[in-house]
Length: 185
Length: 210
Image 1: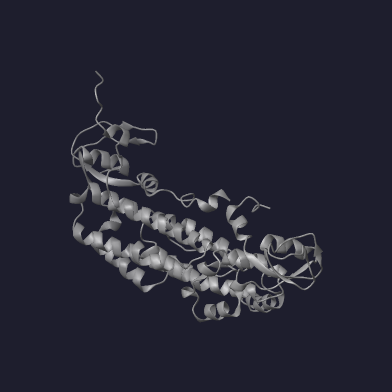
Image 2: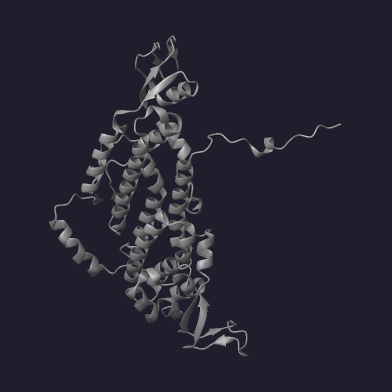
């Protein structure tokens, strides 16, 4: 419930998920181009995650594994997680996986997430703390939102430490005082 | 959830840490004669020329700026001691405990204000930098080996500035690991077989990463 108002959560739940209707649904027009306004049993429809989740609870659909967790991604992750561009697949890879795992019949998602995260985490750790921004920016574009969070935290801590180390005046004149005051005639 | 997006939240700023570090006592050699000073934090004794007195660092720097004293660098800031610490750091994975908690801040303050009072300053400064880099690398290697079962992290003898830099990062990383490695996500039989060797280990109940 704590995530109800979380913007990231709301955006993440918009992700489309392929689901198969187990019962016929009448009066709904999910596909605007079709003439009839009910859905037959067994038809495959792309629903947003929040809708699929609710319908699954009512046993009305069965949900397939979404495309970002397909075999191609899995083999890429196993080969080299740190280089996989997760952001283009799904910017909320980990969150989404956590939500999907209970409703899709696939036990391996959790392990996949964990192993991917572990190795990428090591990369984030080293790169965030040491490398200057320009060189690290290429790496940054393939991280998911949650990983970017971590990365930013470390980087800003490191940057402020370096800035302090440079030295400089402890007190700075407020910018308001810097301007010369015009004397009003 | 607001804390998740604010990166600076659990961080002391470096200036704040420096402020706290200024409470440490150092030795000074005053070159004036003055009566005792009474402050809220304590009384600092009568100052006589050429007699070593202990004062907190902030007072020492204030006096030094006015040219009223010269600061004696602390024990650990000599070239021999620092080389010794450096060698010790290189050898073992554990952090050495020879350096005081605030060594980074104290050394920076002294370099800025009391450069002429430190013998061999051009050697001391790089040594301290090297020691700092080395320790930070050790922290990083320690952090690399997290996994979901890590409940707490224990690294001994970290200094204030080092702790401050990694504090928010460790918190978030631990959170993320906890979320991903939770038991609902991973099916039960795998977990059970994992746990058995741990019980045999006689490890402490809460697993602390050393």
